[in-house]
Image (tube, rainbow, N blue to C red; front, side, top):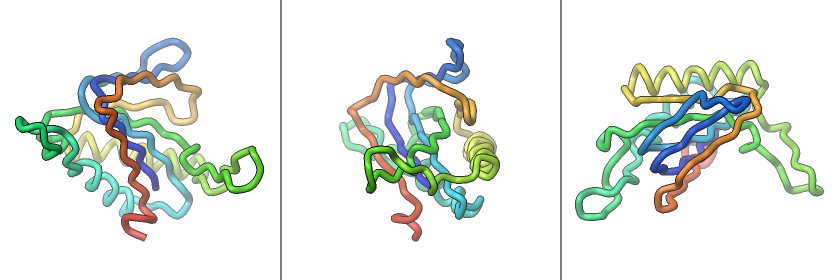
Length: 151
């Protein structure tokens, strides 16, 4: 599982010209799922993301988590995080999860953020052609890769 996390001042996602999710200060999270991913692994990734201390405190130090700033998350599914560009010029996506499996875990992640962690959470539309707008704050972007973190 991969989470590409961007600290944002605001972000939104649109489908067919209509905004379907938007947040102010918080995280824009692009979420990629592979077939080996489980709810247990998703729990670890969520916990890691929610507890990242990457927001500035009153002294300008990155000491605060998203909950401590009362931030929001916009979570967008993105199978292209599993692009394999090692051969040729056309990426391969064979490591990306089966859509049914990936969507189930994506929905699980959204539910956990809202219900377990009480994070205001907005989402994209799984499998849709989406347009994402954001104002990156910093910029501050981190990649959480479950293979590297928990592998």
